[in-house]
Image (cartoon, rainbow, N blue to C red; front, side, top):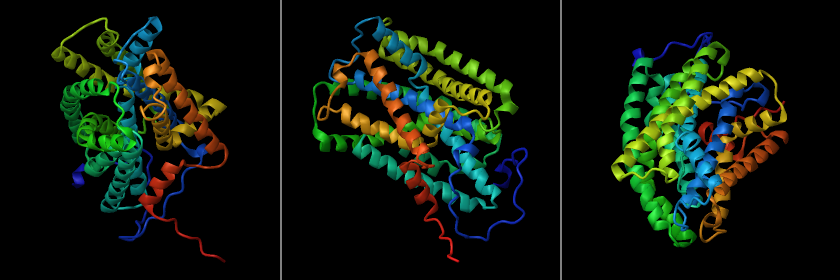
Amino acid sequence: MANDIPPPAPGVRRPPTAPAAGAAAAPPAPLPAARRDLAPDLARGFMLLVIAVVHAHLFRVTTGAGGLTLDGTLDIAATAAVALFAENRGYPMFAALFGYGLAQIFRRRTEEGRDWPWTRRLVRRRGRWLIVIGVAHTALLFYGDIIAVYGLIAVCFAAALRFTDRRLLTHAFVWMAVGSLAYSAVENLVFGAAQESAGGQNPGPLLDAVFRLMTLPVMWPMMIAISVFPFLIGVWAERRRLLEEPERHRAFLVRVAAGGIGLAVLGGIPQALVNTEVWSVGPVAGAALFWVHVLTGYAGGFGYAAAIALVALRLGRRRGAVVSALAATGQRSMTAYLLQSVVWAALIPPYALNIAPHLSDAQAVGLGAAVWLGTVVVCDILRRTGFRQGPAEWFLRRMTYGRPARTPRT
C-alpha cells in the first residue's frame, strides 16, 4: 500500500513529530469565514440551487396531474432549460465536492501527523453518521436523499484517498462507463413507475414514510453507481488544489468550464427535445439518449465547479452581501439541503398542502429557486449571528470527532 500514497501537494510541510499512536483527536475548530477558501463554498451554494430546481420540477412531473402538460412557451422553455442546465448536472458537482472535501480531511489530518489507520477510522466514522442522517432524512422527509449515499461511499471507498493518480483515474473512468449505464437503464424504469403510481394516491404520512424507506434498496445502488466517478475526480482535483488555488490553474479551469458546460448543453439537447415532447422515442432509444444526458452531465457538473472557481479568483478577497450569503450557504450546505426537504414535506405530499399538481412547469422551476433563496437567507442569518456552522454540520462534526476537550480552569 505504500506505493499508493500520493506525493505531498506542493508547498505542504508535514509536522516533524506525529501524535502518539491511538491519541484522541481534538475536534478541529470550524474555520472562520475570512479564512475559508471561497470557491468550494460558492460551488456548494450554487449546486443547491440546481438541486432545488430539479426537485421542484420532478415533483411537478410525478404528481397526479398526468406528468408533463406543457401549456405554453414558458413551460416549454422552463422544461428545456432544466434538461440542458440542471437535470443530472447538479448531482455530479455535489459528488465531486464531497470527494474534494473528504480528500481535504485526509490531507489535513495527515499534515497533523495522523497515521492512515487513524484517519481511515475517522473517515469511515464520518461516513457511518452520514448514513444515519440520510436514513432519518428519508424516513421523515424525502425519498431522494443523497446524504446516506455519500456516507456509504465514504465507508466503502475510503481506501481511494491513498490511490496513486493513475489507479484513481482508472477506477474513476470504469465507474463512469459502467455506473452511468446501469443508472440510466434502471432510472428510466423507476421514473416511469413513479409517474404511473402517482396519480391521485394519498397513502398518508406513515405509509409514505414506509414506502420511502422501501425505496432505499433501489435508490442506494443507483445513486452510488452515478456518484463514484465524480467523487473520485473530486479527490484527484483536491490533490492539485484546483478550487483552493485557482490562480495556479487558470488556463486548465477555463478549458474545463467552457468545454464542460458546452458539452453538457449539447448532450442535453436530445433529452430536452424528448422532455418537451418535440421528439417521441421508444424505450431503448430513450434509455440511450438518457445515458448520453448523464455522461455529458458529468462534464457540466465539473464545468460549473471550474467556472465558479474562476469567479472566486476574480472576486479575490472581496465579499459583498450576495457573495457572503452564497458562501454562507455553501459552508452550511447539509443544513440548507435538509431545509429544502422540510419545505418540500410541507408543500408537496397529498396529505400536506399538495401544491405540485396545481403548478405549471415554469412555476415549479420558480418555486425551486424560491425555496433555495429562502435557505440562503436562513444561512446568512446564521452567519450574521455568529454561528460558524449549521445544526447539521455541528451534529456531524460532534459525532465524528466527539466532545471537545475542556480547557482547565486556572
